[in-house]
Image (cartoon, rainbow over all chains, first blue to last red; front, side, top):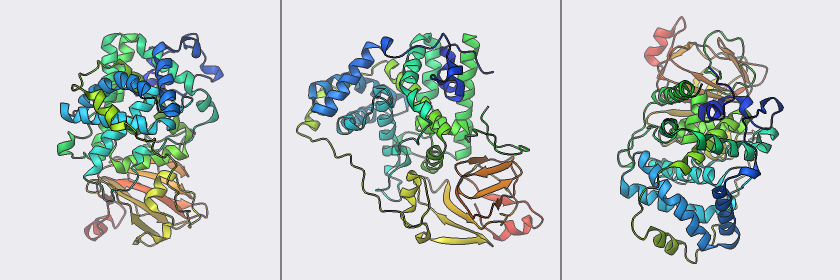
Length: 224
Length: 232
């Protein structure tokens, strides 16, 4: 069931599941792996420079560049999450303001700009979902907690891993890309914010399992 | 495959990281607060789990770049620029958390819910040697989230599950028919698991437990207990 080391198969669930997909581990090195800085895409370097300019110089032109790239994509993300146009517009605005305010917490050695911005956007939506039902409004939601410490190897391999993931996704044919995007962005654990209800945990877990299984199955069938 | 704990395993396998779909759910923001807390606290204690969450987030980040840009309202950028004009960067210094007074090494994400002293929570006795304290979460109407303290050597009554039960072990060790669990392990028990966890190793057990349905007692007096113990 576990796919061979095809770059594309390593994305998504497979990537996350297979310890040996971690670059930097001797046994996991294969010819298919994409190396680091040399082929880091232009766009990624541009985004990193813009983030640095926002963090260090409060550069509004650099912020505008980030906005032009991310705001329309974040709106698309929120729409896929089931928000209406108005709410998706508001959430993308708020997410971009958070990008401005929290720029200096971005660490290029820990995540790509896109991964960091995704986390900001994801948290915005969770925040909006829970605002109304929080027992203690000032409580820090676990969504905002950083992930825990990893092994030293995993941390060292982080930048490489991000490059590898990006390269693998770029290579996906449109149909598979669509499958992966659906699994990551269109999972419905809640209805729209306006009528938020939470499903039983068991149901959410079953649906997540199903999304992962479907993801793997489709990728395997198409690619092996 | 990383799996939920299901019947007959002698011990939690090495590198066991709980349930993969929950890590995926945490990464994409699909978990309610209760489960998100348990999984985040688990990831703080388990580097492998943390790596898996990170990797799913990296995929999501790369996917954001591939989305067809949606059309923004006219003047969206100007609106944002106006909002940030003259705004200083927010101070990112973390709020100085009150130092823990209970000597427990809890995951930071959980500590924010517990406060500086676990003994200051409202503990209720559940059965002999077992007590619990409820933690407030936004999905409290669906899931119960609580700390559970089990005295060393004390068995929790045999029970099955009507729904899902996530147990993150924070201190001590316990075992049941599915294996042995130590600090940082996350046990995921569903309808198919009927167990009688027993704390062992001389240290009391402290767990974070999230359940979305009442458990049912299945031991010799289970039927009777189910009548008058309301226990989720």
